[in-house]
Image 1 (spheres, rainbow, N blue to C red):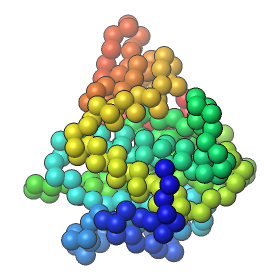
Image 2 (cartoon, rainbow, N blue to C red; image 1 turned 60 degrees about the vertical axis):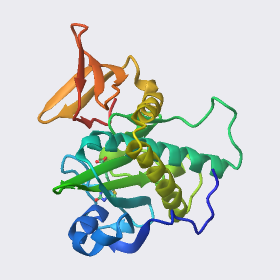
Image 3 (spheres, rainbow, N blue to C red; image 1 turned 135 degrees about the vertical axis):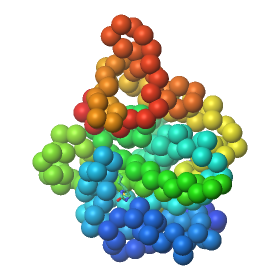
Length: 267
Ligand code: BTN
C-alpha cells in the first residue's frame, strides 16, 4: 500500500492541534460545530489529560506517541460491538505497514512483524502493549455519534515509560530502532480505519472477524483474564465469535461467550 505524503482520505476533515486535554474530549465538546462536517479526525502532539479505559490516564508526552480520535456517525447502533475490533485491527495493519516502510523492503512471507490483538482492542507486540483504544459513543434517535480514540506508543525509548508500565509497554521505536513521522502514521491509519469501517457498513462482518481471529491466534489455547465490570474473568482463549464476542473455555470445559470486557495487559 502506498500513500502520497500529503494524503488523507478526501472525505475526512482533519483538525491538528499542538495540544489539548484529550482528543476524545475535544470531539465530545465540539459536537454541535462538527456535526455537519463529520467524519473528523482530531489529532494532538500532546494531551494534558489523556484518558484510558477504566478511568485510567494515558501517558501523552509531546511527540512521543500518536494521540488521535475519529468522530463519525453510524446509521445503526446494531454494529457497535464490532467497533473496538475494527479499531484494533486497523492499528495492527497500520503498524505492519509502518514497519515495512521503515525497513524499506517487505519481509519474506510468513515473517510479518508480530503485532497481536488482545480482545477487544489492546494491541500487543511480543506480549507488551503498544496501543490502546478508547471508544465513546452517544446514541441519538436514529444515529450514533462514535468517538474512537487511539493512542500508539511511537518514540519511547527504554526508561521513557513510567515505572508501572516499564515491563508491560513497548513502542515502535523500541521495536525498529527508528523514529517515524507521526503525521505519516496518522494518514495511513485514517485510510485503513475507514476502509475497515466500510467493510462493517457493507455487511462484510465475516471478513472482519476472520482478520480479528488471525491477529489474535497467538492467544489460542492460552489462559487469559479480562475485567468484566468488577469481576476478573479467566479461561482458555478459543477465538472471537462471529458476532464479535470472546469465546472462553472455563474450568469445566464449558464454553462461554462474552460481549463486554476490558483486557488486562499482563498475559
Ligand atoms: C486504553 O488502552 O486504556 C485506551 C487508551 C486510549 C488513548 C487514546 S489517545 C487519543 C484518545 N484521547 C484520549 O484521551 N484517549 C484516547
